[in-house]
Each structure stands twice: as structure tokens, then as C-alpha cells.
Length: 193
Image 1 (cartoon, rainbow, N blue to C red):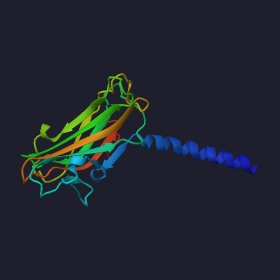
Image 2 (cartoon, rainbow, N blue to C red):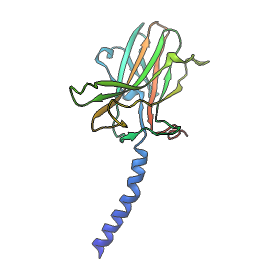
Image 3 (cartoon, helix red, strand yellow):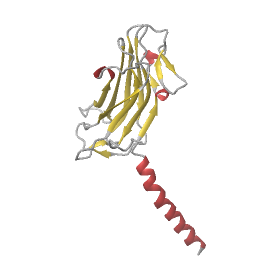
Image 4 (cartoon, rainbow, N blue to C red):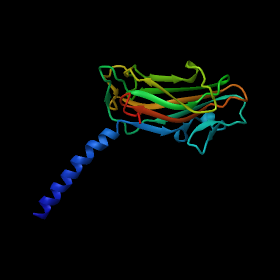
């Protein structure tokens, strides 16, 4: 009797917890400081105590590339009507001589498939005018409405692996680009407070 009761309780707990975990699993987030720095940028980057990443102030010009592997994101179909999964970032672009580009990338895991590497969404800080206070971080977002070639899923881990690629570029001594956070949301309002 005790074994049946224990089995029933475990089944009850699992049935309550698994849907919650699956619902939470659709959102992926990363702090700027968790990025993998490209080898060419090892002398350029600075991880800040705020959780952001930037180019060192001693660097006059350079481009820093970082990658954020997407782990734990479930396969995801693109919604059909009026809603879209989003790529969101909090970044700083201080104006002239500063630029931040963030792209969601899909890489085919089958060599010779012809699909290779595909950009699914991009945010470019130069596409909008700088804010009134360019020293502050501000949110950017874009719909992810492109599918990897030959797939009906946005995230289809049977055939693709995914990562977010970020480029921070500085072309003068006063520029100070930075990246605070990156997020993938399964819908436009899934990540809203």
C-alpha cells in the first residue's frame, strides 16, 4: 500500500512540475558577461561588475565578437497569427564610432547539407537614432520570423544547433559600446513584465 501511495505522489508531483518547467523553458536569457570571447578579442574585452561586456577604454578601435550558445530552448514553431518569437537585447551605443550588432544564428549539424550557417534575426544599434543619453543601456527587440532552411520549426535541434553572435565595434577613443543582456522570447509578450 505504501509503495502505491508513494508512486501516486511522485506521479502527482511530476505531472505538476513538468508543465511548469516546459513553460519556463521557452525563454532563454544570458548576461553579457557570459559570452564566449572570440580569440581575436582576448585583448579587447572587459567584463563589467554590472553584468555587461564592453571594449576596454584603453582600446582606440577594434571589434569584439562574442558567442552565446542556446542551451535548453525547446523546439519551437513560429506562431501563425499576429505574434512572433523575439530576439531582445539591452545594449549601449554611444553614437559616432560605436556600434553593436546581435544576430541569432542556426548552424546545420549535417555537413554537406548545403544549408550551413543562417542568420534568423538581427539587431543593429545603428538602425535607430541614439537615445537622449547615449551612456545608458536601452532595450532593442526584433521578431524572429525566418526559419532555418528546410525546417518548419524555429528551433529544430534534430537538424540545427543555435547561438547568438554579438559584435561590439569601436572606431574612436570616445566610443563605448556595451552589451548587458540577450534574450529569446517564444512570443512578444512572454518576456514582458
